[in-house]
Length: 136
Image (cartoon, rainbow, N blue to C red):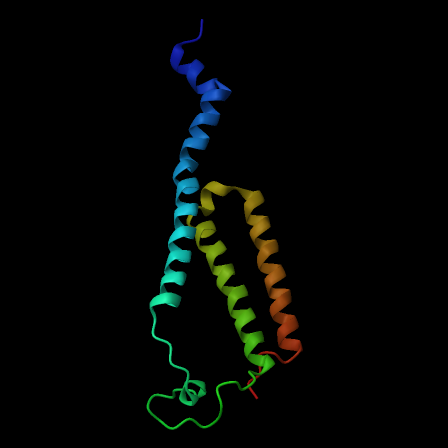
């Protein structure tokens, strides 16, 4: 006859209860977070002083006189640099935990990471070919 401890571990109801008990704090924190954010937004709208003026539309450049209006267009190259940065930042987020657990993840995870790095290398090659990495 199986022991009680083994029956508790194999019981699917107990496993489901243990799984959902880990997420109770998350389920409570999400509405509380929304309430706090909306309260802060409404309070700042109601309590902040509002004085429209012409000077609010000018850019602030560290005490220097502004050279042009604040509503200038940003070049497309800056967006490409930002997207490339985000892509390779995400790569670092995935590679560091993989490298820490390299010996225990197995051969399949090695080939998956090699595929991931290869796809990123293709993206970098495409950006390089299109001239997105040249500062003009």
